[in-house]
Length: 303
Image (cartoon, rainbow, N blue to C red; front, side, top):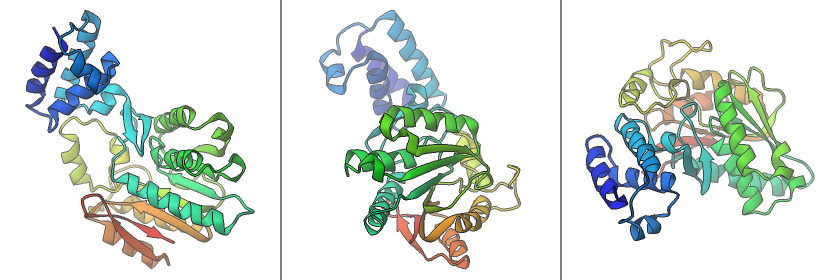
């Protein structure tokens, strides 16, 4: 079977379930054949080897069952960087890049205001590590901050497998002379996290349980632990229905772990961003809501 024949057949197959069948097939071809988009076009009439064809057909069947392409390939681009992902973590979403951009701006301002001291950052509910690693990587690559001035970043998650993914991404993306600045802590929110921080970044579980049920029906395989905000501190279903039970616990803990003049940025859902900001306001924070790429409320910044 040629590349073009496989592409046409697979697009038709995935059209039954996928909202983006052509893109899915192109990404799978690039991954398993090691070709760029232009190479796929130029070589559309070459025969696919039996080994590659078997891999590709398995991948299409997995996608047909609902498994996201990122889990099939093990890769997802975020903030211009290539992250390893697995079903142990959420797949990084473009809207979360807004949080990263805001975090970088705040951190740069704090570094300029405090030229003689290091900043300490916490990436709470880190998952794949895409937030904290993107921040540190950008400070190194774009802003050319020397290692001695880079912030120390503590990446926290309740899930051991998620932290393993974050560790792998740090090893892949952060240069060796800066890797010691990244620390990993397995903890239920701040329970096992020592010290205080100048900036807390967090994209915690915030989706109501009923909505999570609907999301997971399509076989997307993302971990419920990283989605469901209606859980108790023991991980059991709570009586909450707004997706904010975990955030109600997180906010006072975050307040206790912020240094004076510290800042926090939190991503939430468009359906509960205002309620989450109100919870923060009751604790003395001064939240400023921000919107996502589609113009919907997505989270808040506390300076």
